[in-house]
Length: 251
Image 1 (tube, rainbow, N blue to C red):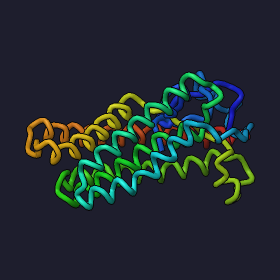
Image 2 (cartoon, one colour; image 1 turned 60 degrees about the horizontal axis):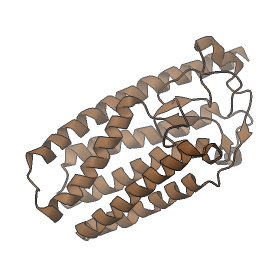
Image 3 (tube, rainbow, N blue to C red; image 1 turned 180 degrees about the vertical axis):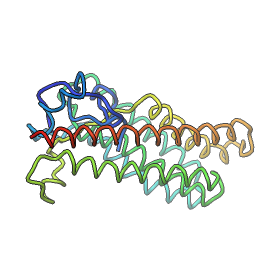
């Protein structure tokens, strides 16, 4: 849903100038100056956008690589998995560069797909690496629980922000932009640590540093930022839903 006035940032709040980026801060397409400005903008305009962009294609390919990476890890082909993960990282940087420098390549869908692709990669790889003893079970449980919660929250925000009539076909029509996504600082830090966790955990058996103290420090720091970013999202969702409810009650 494109909006006509500026809107307030919450943590699905979005800035499409980032690498596309459930999942950072939530906002209804633009940014309000204060809580009252949202009344004039939420739910009043929706827009079909161009989703056939190069960044969206690269992000989709990155998502498609996740199951293959998980399979390679399960087969203990760690070197090959590490190489493919590095290629996925290059596509992530490339789609971010294109989105930042070519405005016609920016889309609300892309802002949601980019962090979702990261979460899909992290979730599949942490589960598969835990199964072969590379990542502790409690850390993987925390990461997976948080990411599933974020995805569920994203579906709920989509439902609440879609202008009526709300039908299944319109709900799943990804060309209808309702909210876009940009990461908060803590979510950016957490994503960087999670991706580092995956990369170094894959590299550990290849280069022989399985029990290194730095790897263990990465486990604890990733767990801490995963918890903090989850709390940040929860606060932002509650604020965004409250503003939506306030606006809709005044319509």
